[in-house]
Length: 221
Image (cartoon, rainbow, N blue to C red; front, side, top):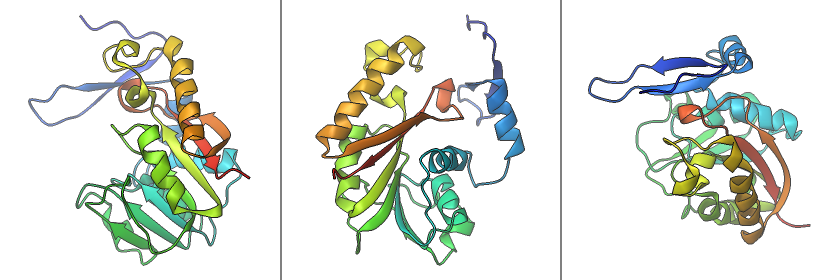
């Protein structure tokens, strides 16, 4: 039996037939944000990055960026909207990047490319990361290699992909396990040779209603 939702709205997302329906839990503020900004970016992930840019006072204007795990391009769209001069869009998939983005001359489309092994023709000012199934400790070293000396990394941390099996319940990381998972990711940042400059909770939840977080990192000074 499905447990009753507590103080949240449960919204089913329509999926193809024969597939299980996914339930997303949204708080009132999340609903208002999603409704107010509906269609602002090609996916709602753009709103997550926008929150990080504002929180960390990062201005992509005129900067060269790399987005690891672009998929449909929510982060790419956000970077362009904030004035990025060029964005390397990296993803292992093919044909998923939104048409308007693949037609934009500022976007360098790098499909069928593993973010952990990508090579770029130039170092970049900003690396953004939105990967699923790949833990931060695997992708952060790759992001580090792409950076200019004074560059920055903004990574969307998804506890459901970082947690141990014993820390997940039906695919969701309960609140009591969030901090231990984040503590492990902080260590991963250091072990990747990076300095953690800030972190913030995403204003929107991820798949299954999981809380997500955005970390800001840079090369040590």
